[in-house]
Image (cartoon, rainbow, N blue to C red):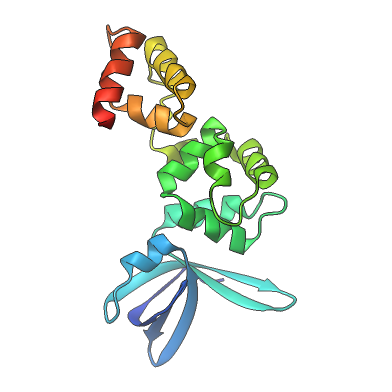
Length: 191
């Protein structure tokens, strides 16, 4: 129904912002990411989603269309409503959330407040194929060498989460390098 709302940030609350447009204040529930971007008095446009249910109507705001699309994907998962989806969007930066889903990093997903292990597993299982684009190539499924994959795997055995291991190795030029060399560079970069 609504695609976006433009106006001036009138009030910035805890988990919400009020945008004034032509004398009307639209209250939008927002993630911590979006809330941090909104400055009182600034002119902004937020993408939005109207959620109608038995006990009320809620308008959700998003800083960009990518955040909105991730929200819409999250709420398609059984047992994930708007509150849990917003907790996920607030708990991790979007690319890290996508990477955790993509790599099946249940440990990282479960650390998000309001997201239990079973829900995290369901999210990863149902959205794994749908979120690859949001990971920003961080998972490197298409362009990493076998050595880089082995290095990321070895880093998980050293105690790093799968998402952290992939992030640590993704920017290293793995061409003509052994897994050991990639691990060494990744650990030096972690200091």
